[in-house]
Image 1: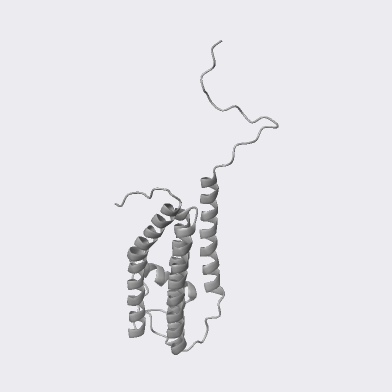
Image 2: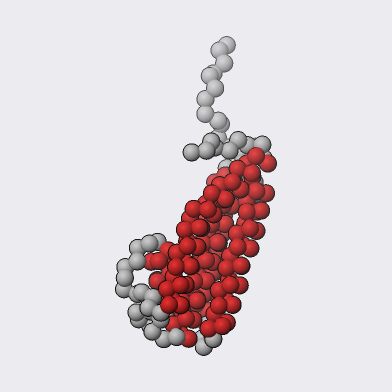
Length: 194
């Protein structure tokens, strides 16, 4: 008798073990859920934190501590990427955490600056306005509807622009290196440099 050619797998039958779900799809889904959760938590914290009537000296300390916090989160995430079974997915989470933390930090500082020195911007800033200004500055869209008028506001905006460029350029390159390390630890071959 002739044996049939190998065809599609037989459907699952009772008593037969089901094939495992694709772990990569599950890991991707969880990575997206975690990244969205991180973004939602940071934005929620931004709106809920009591940022009223602070002094300029504490604003500078907040910015310095916040930038140090962004750097520490970034370094922690690099370590997590290198040790992750899915370094590319972990890099997406790391970028979400670091970038949103950076943006929310500057939005908070802009909000505090406007509160401490009214007129620092072309219009009074609510928290949403401060976040909007931060995003338009980061994305280099800069619609011009809100602009920094005071020297302090302009210095902070330039600092945010420089930090944004560093995050986009340098941090992306560093994340790429961490992905390579993570893949090499697993014995997987990283993609060639472009």
